[in-house]
Structures are given as structure tokens and as C-alpha cells.
Length: 281
Image (cartoon, rainbow, N blue to C red):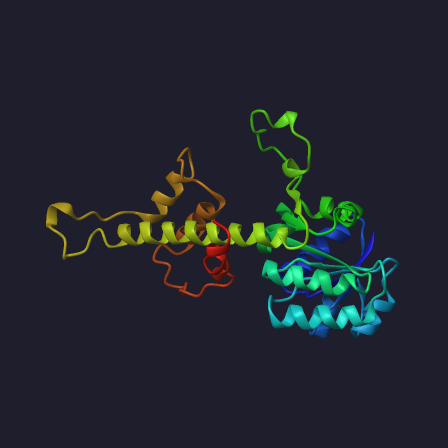
């Protein structure tokens, strides 16, 4: 399929690469001409403006947005909508708030433009691992886009099947699901992010306890000089708290046991689940 990718940051660029590896044609757009030039050198079709971008898409036009949530997504979506026609499709693969999806889908529906929200997880590792996707929007449009989702998704791989899963239909085992109408995909991703940050916070607090277990403020016979890298590694092997996030923690501690090169900066969106919890209990 031919589709466009707007936003060639770490995720957008790698998603473009994965789609091209899967045989899709990609028209690309980014605020940085260097990003466009770089990915065009790998086989994508470059565009110099949104007008040029739209002109190079097939019909129906399919534009996937991978830009920061909030103002950048809103501005880009509105700019694309002004240039698109009935039956064209806009896909928001970022971290938009699900209520914004509902509003946008209604607005675009008046023009006959379809809107699909895709909560996308996988980060910079998705190029090789694939991307877990939680999808919302008109079911028939999502079905039309299935070849795109199938290419981006991890596939079944070698993960053991959940007992009883063989009796159930759907694409969940392939790494993507249709969640429901507009906003459902980003709603599921919002809760996913809240769980993710909660897990990371739990690991952080636990390892902070370990780091301070040798404090001179503790009774001498209660002090422990613990190897944090070894603890993270052993937990990866048979422990009930093992996870991909623990894998990343173990990698970081193996490279830098004191994490002196890391700051407390958080990239992502963690307020959504807290802000919306009162409406969805």
C-alpha cells in the first residue's frame, strides 16, 4: 500500500523503515529537511511541503501522523484535513488524549474524511521488535488498513500461547487489536501508559531502597552493600516481577551501575490516566 508518514522522529522514522521493509510505499514529511532527505535515501518518497506530500499519495489518501501530542498534532491534522477529500484517511499514531480523538473524528466526518486513532507502543526498538497497537475508529476503515497494521505489528513470534487462546478469534496474538470506535485506541493506550509509569516507579523505589541499604544511618548489622546490576539480572530469570522494563533496567545498570549518566527526566504522557480516572472507574 502507499501511505504517508508525517513526523520522522525516532519512532516515525523507524515505522517508515519497517513499512518499507514490508513492501509498502512511503511518502514522508517532516519539519526537518535533513530527516526527509535521510529517509528518502533509504527508499521513501520525499516531499517538500504538505501540498507536495498530499499530491504524492494515492487514492484514498492515507496519512499517518507521528508528531507530539497536543498542539503539533492538532495543527498538523487540521492542515491535512484542509487538503484532503472524502474517503481519505488520517491516522494519529501518537499519544493524543482520547477525547480529542472523538472531537476530531466528528469534525472530519462532516468532510467525509475518516479518522483512526492508534495507540502505539514499541519505542525506538520497534523497528526490529515490531509495534504493539491499540486501534480505534470506524471498523470498516480499520479493516481496510489491516495490511499496514500487520506489517508494523510484532507477529506471534515464539511467545507461548495463552491457554485457551486458540479458541478465540482476532489479532491480539499478532500484536494489534481493534478496540472500538473513535478514541478507544488512545483510551487503552492511556491506561497502558499509566501502568507503564507505575511499574517504572515501583522499580525505581525498590532499587533506591537497595542503593541506600548501606547507609551509615542504619544499624551496622542491618547494612547491606548490594549489587544492583546483579539483582536486576537475577530478577529477569524466573521472577514474577520480570518484564521488558526490567530488561531495560538491567541493561542500564550493567552499563553504569550508579546510573550517574541518567537524569530524572520523563519523556511521555503520564497525566492522562490520573486526570481521567474520575470519569472511568
